[in-house]
Image 1 (cartoon, helix red, strand yellow):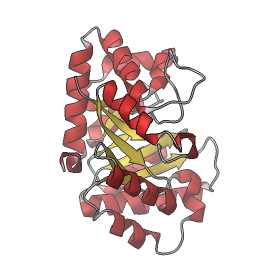
Image 2 (cartoon, helix red, strand yellow; image 1 turned 30 degrees about the vertical axis):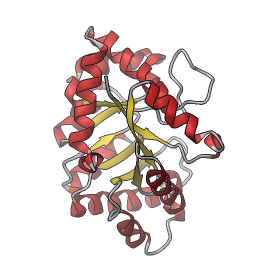
Image 3 (cartoon, one colour; image 1 turned 90 degrees about the horizontal axis):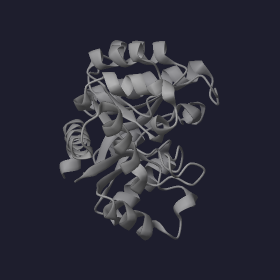
Image 4 (cartoon, helix red, strand yellow; image 1 turned 180 degrees about the vertical axis):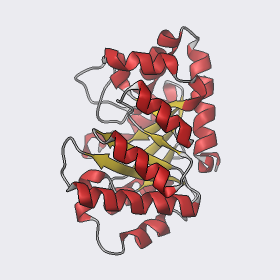
Amino acid sequence: MILIDTHAHIYYDDYSGRMDDVIQAAADNGVEKIISVGVDLATSEECIKLSEKYPSVYAACGYHPHEAAKAPRGYLYELEEFYTHTKVVAVGEIGLDYHYNFSEPRDQKKVYLEQLEMASSLDLPAVVHCRQSDDDILSGIQQSGHSYGVIHCFASDLDFANSILKTGFCISFTGIITFVKELEEVVKTIPLDKMMVETDSPYLSPKPHRGKKNEPAYVMHVAEKIANLKEISLEEVANTTTETAYNLFAKLKN
């Protein structure tokens, strides 16, 4: 059985000094590949370095909405250079976050749309963060004309999920589904082949690891919860979500 952790932040200091163990634990739990996702230029570069050191690690590069106001002039050119790397599989993490508003919504929208348009022009999938910003996230995707990517760490309702699927984007679930009942209807209802699994490490540890630092090995618990809710085998969840990840992130095959 093979799983892919499609979204983790393993470049954080939380993992310094034990990265070999983190990667090995993931492998021991069937996690064949991990996408380490940057939130600005510096962390995107860290992700690339990790991908060069560990065969199972790949990178996504982009500007997170929290960092949008700090994006320097010319940041798109620097990101574009990163995307030429054979192990950089996506534009991300991009998006909108109106819960924290660490960057002004105007700055967030500008940087989000610029990166969506770049993803479309480069024919790369977009990895999108969405928090209390469903309408603007959806309209951005529609406006850009980009037809493939993922709403990562999905935490919205079924109506929004269906609207997202109509754009061609898919949905990824984290450990949140192991402890937030409101998401169970979404998991049960949307097609298995439109979803992926992730940890968002070091955040959002699933049960039974709540309160502990998350890591890619724990993505198994997300897949188990999907299997339980859909009343299907864990193997079917693993096979289908992995196939979806390979189809979306074509460079994972490199």
